[in-house]
Image (tube, rainbow, N blue to C red):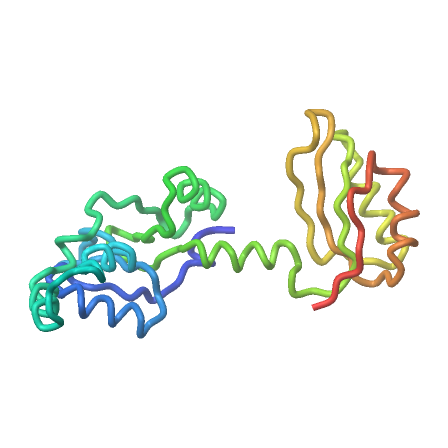
Length: 216
């Protein structure tokens, strides 16, 4: 899966000379938390709601409301935006985008094509994808188990589920307890009784950590 399939587009952008008060109102109206800053069709920065709020006077200030509004009207987006922006392209693998965001502790990445902003991928987009990968909106039996890290184990597991008339609606794997195994979490539709599924797969796994019937 590539970023272009999951990014938000068309993306809302703002100019660097926009007053931060206007930017705050725009982001609230559009229900967004960050937006690329574009000038002359080129990306020049990115600004988040935190950047804008941090530029506002403290609630403990002695300034009057008129004084605060006057000062805020003088602050532009370019005064608070991040200028060194990490970007990706639409053909970047989605997991690479997630890695960049996690490693750099950022919540979004502008997506460029020929130096033009064509979208943005955010933590919200990745969270929605996570829900799909985990089958969170699908009914079925959810299983977490440790599998030996050996050739053919997954094939035998899939065959055991198929023999019961079941079908995988979600499947993912992560590191196990040690290098010899993998932890898998999957959801199966078409099998009604968790005990029946447990009995079928138990000979193939090292340990069934959790098994339950989930409903949306």
